[in-house]
Amino acid sequence: MKKIHYNKLIRDGIPATIKRHGGDYKIRRLKQREFEAELLKKAVEESGGLMAAKTKQELANELADLLIVLEEIKKTKRIPEKMVAKAVKDNLKRKGGFKKRIYLFWSSDTGYKTNERRYKRK
Image 1 (cartoon, rainbow, N blue to C red):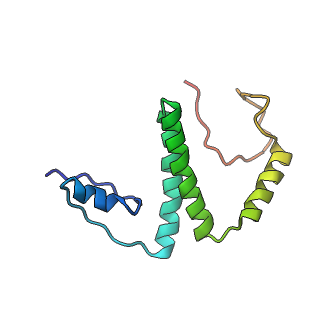
Image 2 (cartoon, helix red, strand yellow):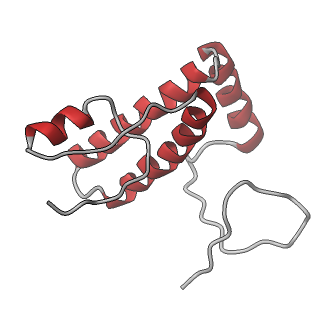
């Protein structure tokens, strides 16, 4: 049987699913620091799935996957829910929400540093 190399963090039930379908696999348990780094990569991977969702149910499934990863990050990094709630409140106060549906084409370079990647418009 052909091998597909994934080299990524997977959910606990995946090895059993592979076996159930007659497949084989190679896994290892990650050390804590590796696990934390891979969780962050997994959050990026799962958020990418939102773009591919075509139905409301697919979107709900992708949101669920992302929320599970985010909850695990909170647990692993020992970030209390109160701290996240305060950060949400502070961010909304500082940046606002999305009620106005504002789409930015460009702005002057004021030296503001954002954490988003810069995408070139096609």
